Length: 379
Figure 1 (tube, rainbow, N blue to C red):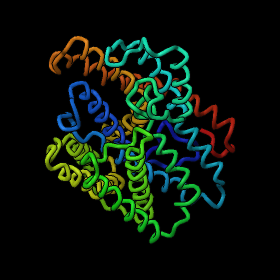
Figure 2 (figure 1 turned 90 degrees about the vertical axis):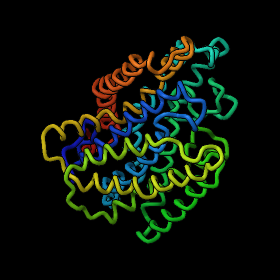
Figure 3 (figure 1 turned 135 degrees about the horizontal axis):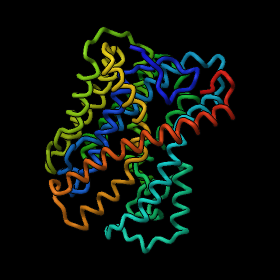
Figure 4 (figure 1 turned 90 degrees about the horizontal axis):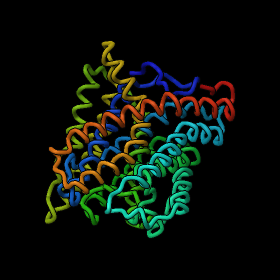
């Protein structure tokens, strides 16, 4: 059910689905933990919190649901350029902050896996400039050498696709009748299921590179989940759900933490699991979260805090994974030995996200809204 407005909202924003905000924060914290365990993994097969990458698909369906709820009934008075400006103001300040933090952390992380001595200051400045503008680096030209679109702040790749989704929504998808939108969801879902089950990886952990197979995977992830969220907005009829936040939070953590299925011999099994998650469980969790209502002050505060810090946390945590990774690799640490550091990264990332929100993100977006939006849309 709709509740209080987040700190991050425009002044004319509709009341938020408070539980959905909280679930976004739960998923963001799980992503931080997923990335921490990359320091000990040799491949997807032995990664702890193995399906943490599916949080992106949950974010996409949340985004589609929220965008549809917030904007579907405004197109009689709102122009495409106004929508695009609003979305840039909402999303881009933290893209810039993530790029700047990523540049500093990359240059001083000291891990021999990435030889910073081979990266000139000019190359680093150029990479930071590209990341800050959300312009992807091409394979073989980025500073980390892993073929990433955004080597200074890896999670920026999902924002690249988020922008694509918002543009497609403004120009095309919003105009589709509900049946046509349902057909688009079905077709994209079949494509993504085929990618998961019959594709080269046995999963949908794709999208971070401009290579053909990676871009295809990322685009299919966006098209299904974002469109499914829009469709869910149109057909949504809430049902009373008690304890929705806690039930859905537990479900999200459990789904993302399931070990890899099938090994190297039966990778399709893991693809089936990914398909069930993005096609069944995630839409169901969004439905339950939107249907539920917080009934006590504590849960309401938890949801609001998690919702407020969720996006900043997603955008600032990964540069600190570089430092943690270097520490673990340089000292050959086990997870038990590095547990205090891991806890520090999680707590520190949450604290930094809150600081960025309060003293950077909200003030910058208020300035941009005052400068570029009509008075009714000011923060």
